[in-house]
Length: 143
Image (cartoon, rainbow, N blue to C red; front, side, top):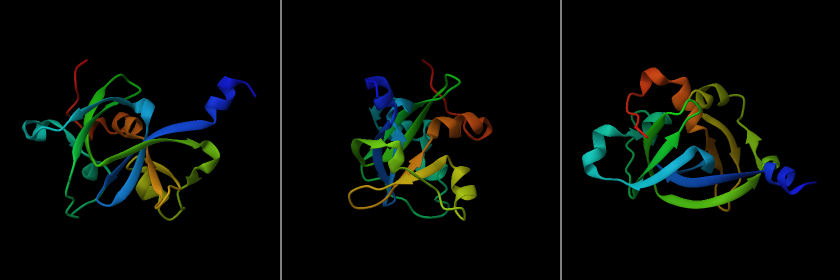
């Protein structure tokens, strides 16, 4: 196996927690990480709204803005909580969503699950979510 082919078997994930749930996003979708400022409150997207937390009360203890770059070149500021780690996972470690949950979670960009040290990681494709829901998201960033 060549070094390039071996690298293709791995996915680098930025892990973060929101509302007690651990999520992972492909690090290649993250254009920048910015410290959150209260002045930006109306100019960002909140992860719990994207992920469908509904009426649950979600407290952000250590908010950070991830600038998500999409396939069509747009950039969206997304507030997440508690950056945890950057880890590499082999594709074979990733499981599909259970059929009962897949339609609901896929609508929110969640596409798979993988184990972590202490709890499962829900994998989210934020770039695809923003590309497929332009009508729901008006706050984009200029280059």
